[in-house]
Amino acid sequence: MRRTFPQELPDGTVRQLHPFHISMEGLETAVLCRDDADYDAIVKILCVAARRKKVLVIIYAVVSNHCHVAILAANQGDADAYGQEIKRMYAMWFRRRYGEEGILRHTDIKAIWLDSDWYVRNALAYIPRNALDNGCPVQDYRWTGYRAMFRQGYERNTGRKVASLTKRERERILHTGDDLSDVRWLLNEREELIPDSFCEHRYLEQAFEQDPAFFLKTIGGQNAAEMQNKLITAPRTIQTDGEFFKLATETSQRWFQAEIPSISLERKIRLITYLHRTSRTTVPQLARVFGLPRNQISRILGRKT
Image (cartoon, rainbow, N blue to C red; front, side, top):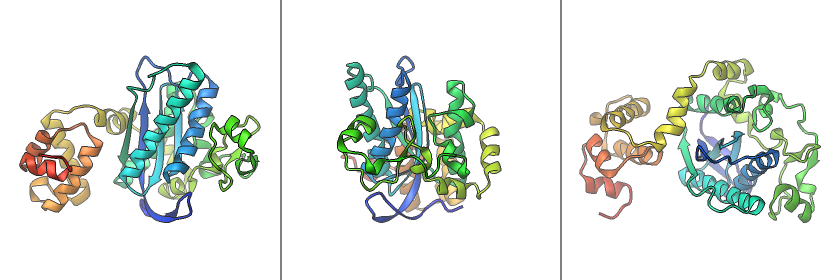
């Protein structure tokens, strides 16, 4: 499959894009979505934020205390900025609707680069599978982009055009004053965004070789606990040196088909910057695992020594 390729962004520019998984995890005691209006608001925020930060949404799922979205972005910085924009916009929505401050203060946003075919396919399958967290079959869940895939959405190319909305209507329905006259998004009769009109379904479909049965098989056969650990838990948890060494070794073997001691400094730098972004680690731990001085690790990460 092609993980990376040139594609047109919302502003009309063409850039080389890469797949990322983004998760917004709420506190266990915090319910981020209290009713359908909240779910609907997050979906619309995912779209508006993507347009602002020049990324493309592939597929998403919103459940009661977290959300997941796979995107195509030009680099890690753009993916991180998109995640922070989602958090900022939803905090504004929550404060305006409920008058509550700080509900998202400790909500964590993490953007993970999907660096292999295995990661891409499993992340794209893991996202709609989150419907099960809300006690709903994947194919029936309302707040996911699953219906946009493999032409499963019966609403495709029908619905009210967002581009035709007045400014007042955009503010009421999309909760934004942004000029959306150039978007292809569509609204259904409930004034919800139709997933077919904004999800990059073609990327997911080519990832699964244009075969919906392959997609369904991956969803059904997935080890959810493993994906939870790789995409959600591990990047937020401090690991022991042994656990982190195993992760670094597996990544080195996957990327370079070689153990860490035998790879070049240039490749070590690539691994260090990637693992620092995607794992909770420290300069001393990176120094121990990669066998480099701490001040060199700090320089690689752009920190002052």
